[in-house]
Image (cartoon, rainbow, N blue to C red):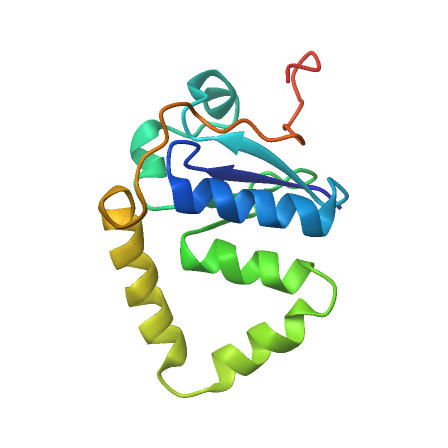
Length: 135
């Protein structure tokens, strides 16, 4: 199964986390679209306003299956080999999911101040291709 990961390609933290995920996955499960690629996002019916709520994960085979924000991060953890154990433990600890969601929101809303903004949008080595093989 393949998933599109939509991330902020101008955010240093986001781009570094995508690079980490690229190294772990090597394009086997995930392909990537920066939020700045409005043409590809439009093909997926995603607006720039949608992106304000954080990263988005989309099941390529069932595009209506989508996760956003901290839920997307957790689902990526579930998909990675062995990751589901960590996600289950995280969700099982009282209050941790709630706190994690609030922390995600704070980082999302202040990411440029906290981690800086790239001069150039990061383009993944594993871009999402669809609609006339548009990469």
